[in-house]
Amino acid sequence: MRGLTGSGLCLAQACVSWLFEQLFAAATVRYGERAVGQDELTARLERYIADKTGSTNVVVTGLQRLPGGASRETWGFDAEWQANGRHERRALILRRDPPGSHLKGERRQEFELLALAAQSGVPVPQVYWCEEDPSLLGAPFFLMERVAGETLPRRLLRDEMYAEARRRLPQQLARALAAIHSIPADHPHLRGLPAPPPGQPAALFEIDRFEQIYRGLAPDPHPVFELAFRWLRQHAVPEERRTLVHGDFRVGNILFGPDGLRAVLDWELAHLGDPLEDLGWLCVRSWRFGNDHLPVGGLADRGEFFAAYEQAAGVRIDPERVRYWEVLGNLKWGVITIVQLRTHLDGAVPNVELAAIGRRTAEVEFELLHAMKGDTQSP
Image 1 (cartoon, rainbow, N blue to C red):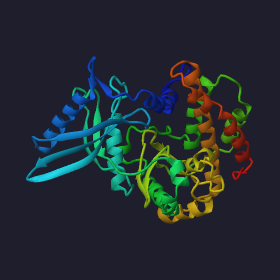
Image 2 (cartoon, rainbow, N blue to C red; image 1 turned 180 degrees about the horizontal axis):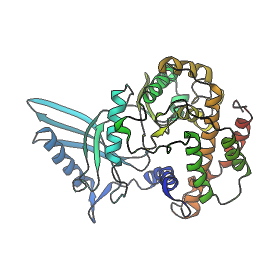
Image 3 (tube, rainbow, N blue to C red; image 1 turned 90 degrees about the vertical axis):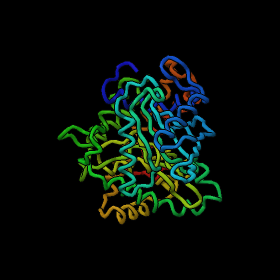
Image 4 (tube, rainbow, N blue to C red; image 1 turned 120 degrees about the vertical axis):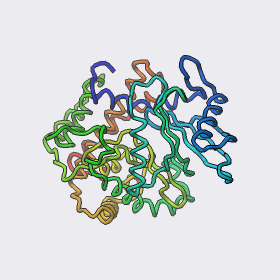
């Protein structure tokens, strides 16, 4: 990713890191210079949980590497132990940076962010223990609750067993977003998150970050993207408030069941900015998965969802301002398709799926032309 620096480089790395999760989810970790297989990782987890719970008979079973997430290793397992005369059994998730990662402090930050989100009423997995000592498992990590549920958007939007979930989710997602956005940007636990510099509107900060990626990676001219960058700068909206922004709030990053929303996942792109960014991103056409008549995640129309959000957040929102962020969201997704294509073309991860995703850039260009003229109900 030559030509990228600073926050643009970090963001580009985050955009493609999930690809490595999918392609290199082998059942080993690194400990020092020696590979650690599942058996040894299981033993290390048993010793760690025993130390934390005061138990001497911890049993870890079913340890397996899970796909998904950006720049994070995710492992699921069950743990049982006896402590204080009680039998405990918990389904757990291990979240850790890849061994050798140079991203300092992010594990603690994610842990504290999830704890803060829970305190603010956001449905998230409960977090238990966080460790920054890399000698335990080769990298900083934390353990959290494993929530039962499904994540595949097409199952949510197609399967009959999730019909009730589809009915409930617009209200549930609106309440979850309102809870996220109730956390002010000056909260002490949010220090260290990416944020616009003083005096710069959040919209221009996001445009700058993604334009740097685009200029550094785009192999061919994209006149529609050039037009979109110009349009977004000319129509930039100042934020009315600055809060925590999830950064990737969409169908596909939630855990759901037949009863609807169970947990909001994948907080790696959280930052400080305009809360309307999350609403616009949720409306991006690619997250509708074919349900284009329901532009909010394939689940609801804009009016219904905006009304639910206003009621939950206690604020009034301007649909035109959300439309601006929807245009920016489409442009951001278009840049990400280029990132994925270049990941394949540059040989970093040779993969036909990446090449196919790269061909979707044209779809985004088509959508951008409609969105910029106000026709966000494009077929």
